[in-house]
Image 1 (cartoon, rainbow, N blue to C red):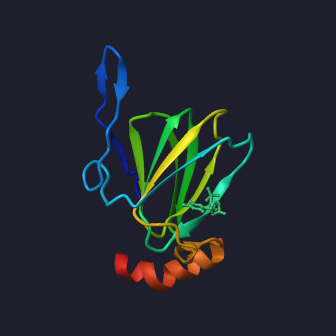
Image 2 (tube, rainbow, N blue to C red; image 1 turned 45 degrees about the vertical axis):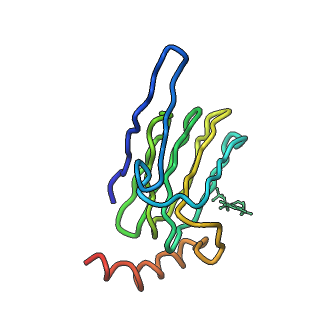
Amino acid sequence: MRKDITKYNVHTDKWGKLVALEGNGEIPFNIKRVYYIYGVKEGVRRGFHSHKKLEQILICVHGSVKILLKTPDDEEIVTLNKQNEGLYIGPNVWREMYDFEDNAVLLVLASNHFKESDYIRNYDDYVKYYEKYVREKKQ
Ligand code: TYD
């Protein structure tokens, strides 16, 4: 696993800044869902899941947030604090989000509609799933 961060082009003019993102362009999939997380209280940690198929891009459009990315082999922490930076998270990566700055807004672009059956919400189940279906494909 390695940090998969893309810097987006910012259109700056005398009126301010604008970032434009297109599905299958800057975003490496067809965007089927957008959601955003905000109003997260101090000390809260959320996420605690992986997805079997879903691909996502996370952009902290205001403030900052830390993201823990984890597989059975690897772990890293990414700080998102730039409005023109997107973090790609593919399938089968465990994630936790924490240290939300006051008023932080985390925008998420997703490759599919919400489907609870695509989630794995228990870490031990995630490791079992990874060993059974993911690891052999990676070798
Ligand atoms: P959840 O994915 O558990 O949030 P997080 O991983 O950030 O802790 O989602 C929180 C709640 O919102 C849960 O009840 C499911 C609901 N939800 C939707 O209805 N649609 C969505 O697209 C998402 C992401 C969540």
